[in-house]
Amino acid sequence: MGKRVEHDFIGELEIADDVYYGVQTFRALQNFNITGDKLSGYPSFIKAFAQVKKAAALANNELKLLDDKKKDAICKACDRLIAGELRDQFVVDMIQGGAGTSTNMNTNEVVANLALEIMGHKKGDYQHCHPNDHVNLSQSTNDSYPTAIHVALYDELSALAKDMEVLKKSFENKSKEFKDVLKMGRTQLQDAVPMTLGQEFHTFAVMMGEDITRVLEARSLVTEINMGGTAIGTGINSHPDYPKIVQKHLCEVTGHPFKTADDLIEATQDTGAYVQVSGVLKRVAVKLSKVCNDLRLLSSGPRAGLNEINLPKMQPGSSIMPGKVNPVIPEVVNQVCYAVIGNDVTVSFASEGGQLQLNVFEPVIAYGLFNSISMMRNAMLTLASKCVDGITANEKVCSDFVYNSIGIVTALNPYIGYENSASIAKESLQTGKPVKEIALERKLLSKEQLDEIFQPKNMLNPHMSAEDKAKFQKNSPFV
Image (cartoon, rainbow, N blue to C red; front, side, top):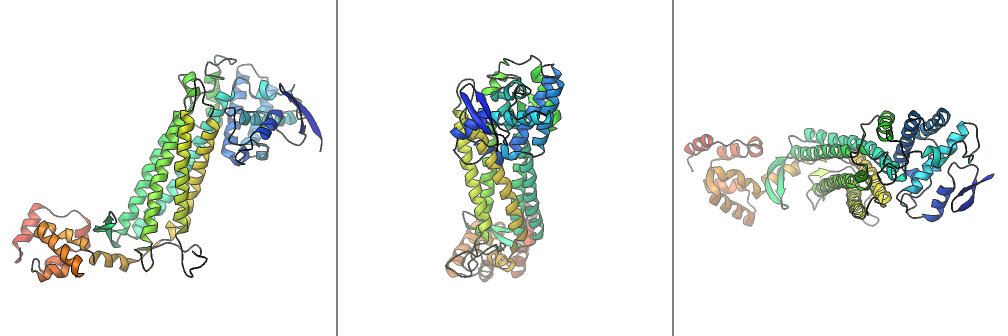
């Protein structure tokens, strides 16, 4: 294996000939062995950076700052990276000092050396295409790095919304399947009033739908970019027309509606969009975790719990208790949600920690956001396919809970009053007698009237008008 010598202002280093990164990337490898998670593990981020570099090359060429030969080679190199090639050459740690400079230079060096090969030159022969002078032309890490984050987040949030739709659809399917399964609703873990299992699952679908809307709203925040701001937003070393031209090309390259910020100095230091995106991800996580709690509770037992639903049996649940099966899919999704909530704390602190004209902590912000979205996407699809789609209902268990519960006494309130209903509930709780039996014994209502009151349609929907109540009581021999 041959070597080439590259240099920066610190000194010279030998670089293996078979790698496409250069001296500044190599220094980052020496300095930042932090998470073990390399840039190569985040393909959407690599793709986004390549799209940014391509848009910059096209803009610089249009402004006569980059000749056609270099522009074509850089664009071809970027196209190959966009297509997924050479991901193993993106070797820097996701968490790094320098506000993302190492990631930017890893990209610049890979693009430059790939462009050199396309032009027929050797890697490292930077006089023909230089990582800084040509690939990074009119840019700084401080505008290209956050812009790449925004481009990647746009794609990732779009993909998250689609995966959330899959889970939403799974809940909707179950809501239709369980539409006639009568069960007991509960508040404070106590019997409340009847509902259907279908209504319960429809609620899960609605919750997911609301959060899909919030995710897409958050996506709109990352369409604002600061390309052309260079170091601090003043645009030093760039052409006056560069911001609007690079924005135009970035929209063409990505197919997304990016727009240049009105104030590039503000946009270079402000990380509010990341805080908002992270907050939405936390919202999704909190609500999804609550749903998983409900699924675990509803399936608890099977003999000593609620046992209203059956989750698919995925694996043995114990190394010592034969026959035990655990709700492992909701459990793992709960843990994903906790991790996302933790990442939100990190993003919040990192965003607050910015100083003056730049926030140097964007690497850990990007790391937290990309990991949160990736985990949430996997969790959505896993919960849908390995849990929700296979849930079945224990209809008799659900029905027995309704008719053996004191909660149904609430349905008697309009007919016999709160005091009579409360007295029946107390006796039922003390004796274990069903509510219906006690009401008959006390001759408060006839069997026919109780049968009518306790019909599912009357316990599940609004139905009582003043006229209906008066008519019912008028015809009753007991009231």
